[in-house]
Image 1: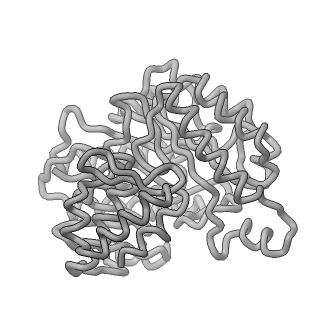
Image 2: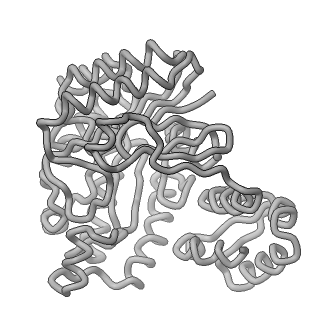
Length: 362
């Protein structure tokens, strides 16, 4: 069983914080989707598929006939299971009842809506097209339509304070979405926002405030029935993202399109992020690696510890030996690690430092 990720790179604007492989040149859509269809067709050989994820970029503003074409090629080249999860990312400005009906006709069962904030003062520095009121309306339309709905929020935005973040979080809860992704702002090198912050023309909230609000959010979401199942992801029972769980469990998936990554038979590879090169040779790997035993150990521990369920104590010992035992003892004593029966997991404060803490094992 495998999953499919399909990248739709076209956006109306390039948001100030974004470092993804995107383009605002809509004139290239026809050429891109010709290349994308060829790549999907060239790799598919009837493999059973239980998750499909249309990501971006902005899949929701892709021309309808291009969406239909890619969905058709997927059905032709892969064995899509009847109960497959079929997700699509969408921006609030693209969501209408009519649009949702057309997406569902393609097979879409789940929408992931890029809200980021329900506060206009926080949205403006990001370069987002939508405002807070439009975001609220879009989420309500999706929830009322009965499609499984997820929304994204970002913690640590310019102009964000404790009151504004809590208000956004409460709005997200009140709107009734079954899934919420809460990301802490990551200043990607080369992004517009990163340059603005480095010049002090934009100020970000204090790190201590961001850490405290993240820990408080975990507790608030849990009380609202949205349980944390990964560092940045919360869901009502049964509404976890099956496709994203595939990544965290190191299960296999094909990635199609600009900059897309794949993981098959222990080999990881990625397409080019250069649109011109992709159009010339769609699906030709720009990067590939076969993980060593040590790298697999590191990745296994890293991905399992991103989840509150953690991993078995004996697995840490088996994978890391004496150093693993010492690491566990140190973490439990310091409060960033907990032992629950035979399992080991990071605490909320441990999640905030997960990359650094896990690197200590190696």
